[in-house]
Length: 338
Ligand SMILES: [Zn+2]
Image 1 (cartoon, protein in one colour):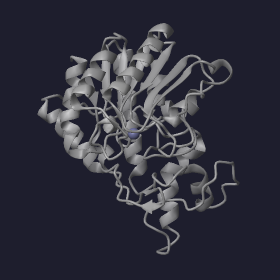
Image 2 (cartoon, rainbow, N blue to C red):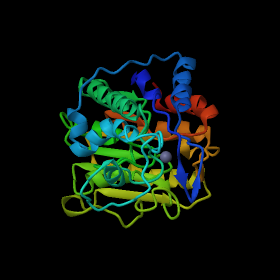
Image 3 (cartoon, rainbow, N blue to C red):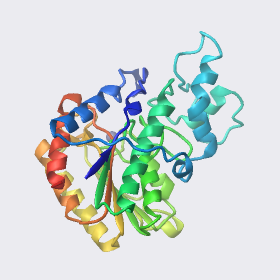
């Protein structure tokens, strides 16, 4: 199975993380990429550098003004002088459209929460993470049964026009759109411990991309504003969004119960291809985890998804217990049987 990663994905280095009323040490750090790369080295698996496929596939998912902001915000912000912090972060939160006058107005619009600061290298890393997802999708379009994209920063919280939850470009959504060059019906299965509200939002009114997410209950847990069971799609997309939240503190059996429901829904939908959002923050020791999935459980998860026998692009999402990332990655690949 071809796997893709670009060293530029490790450049983004956030310094701020505001959550539940406290400034906290950031968790989505370059060491995540280093540990996942270490996992590949330990398995003696090759990581291929993605080619640069440009912006077209990213523009199919994201608002052009938002992408321009990601590319230019840090320069515009730091040019204002030493009174401004060394990364772009909003202290004003709005979801409504605003006139976008000034960098602070754009920041209020385009950064949805306190966990997605924009620094000098944020765009570069997010861009190359997306290129890894695009390259993996092209490998599957060219006939590979499966491909893996080591994406860092992750992507499933990125909305069409806003960053959030450590995410800037929605790698899974980009992959799904690229796969549609050949495969009409796509399922995005997301088993990261957080609901991917960005993916849900992007495909909410579409029946050709069915988003299915198994995640911890979003009540008082990120993304907070979405991920509940009664969100089932709208218009043509009604019935093609399935949220399967788990109570906080759930053990592995609850996770596999929800996964079983997800797999049955996939079989009933009969998709032509699958995008699998894999987050190791379901792991029991992860600082973000609200559930207790073991390393053996991660292997079993990969095995069960693999049995769907669909063309598949796997996109790396979260996972913040750095020391176990290599082992969990190895268990995941073992479960895939590749
Ligand atoms: Zn997550």
